[in-house]
Image 1 (cartoon, rainbow, N blue to C red):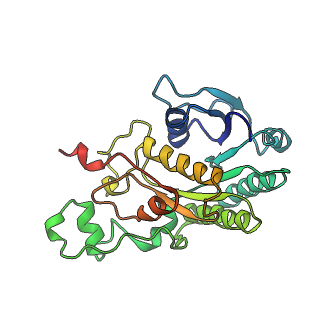
Image 2 (spheres, one colour):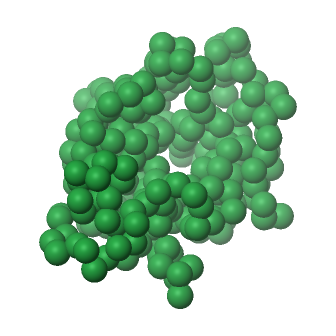
Length: 268
């Protein structure tokens, strides 16, 4: 383990990665973050103190150059996306196989999504009365509030986007079974402006502030350092929203997740 925590973000210029580059160093000054992105990728960071160490590289076209970046890493956060399902899964295979090839594999956080469990809820189907009323913010029409969707529930993918996330979660379990540290994070609604009032239905329920996303990554990495990480787990990255439909108590209990934002403050 290095004096600093060397973090490699694969796809760090996007909405999630730019938030990690901004907020992880605020949580611990020892994070040294390098972002690997396609040449010309747009940087969505909005804060001046976001770490800006960039490597322009197509990891699919130059897998050996990508592997050369891994030996000094303490944490790899895999955020990138690529094309259709087969191409995306091939990139995931490249990333995880490269991590496993290291003499001492770094901890790896795989990018999943709340959409990995789209088969369990719908804000659009009027027959699912709770979720439909919630998306309308018609709280008076809700007579019974169901339990939040458990962090431990397996993926329930209904499309290729969900299937690519399920593939990442399968890799997470495979890494854990081999005795190494890995988790998947099912990101909620994250955007570079941390906006809540966007057109997407029910967004206030699944919203996650970039800072809270960084807090979950930070707590998972701390648990890894302390040898208390439940490797193989998947957690929802959701802020402490009043009307959250996903279980964030499990990561609170297991890794000390401590979100500090609530979408409802934007409606006051």
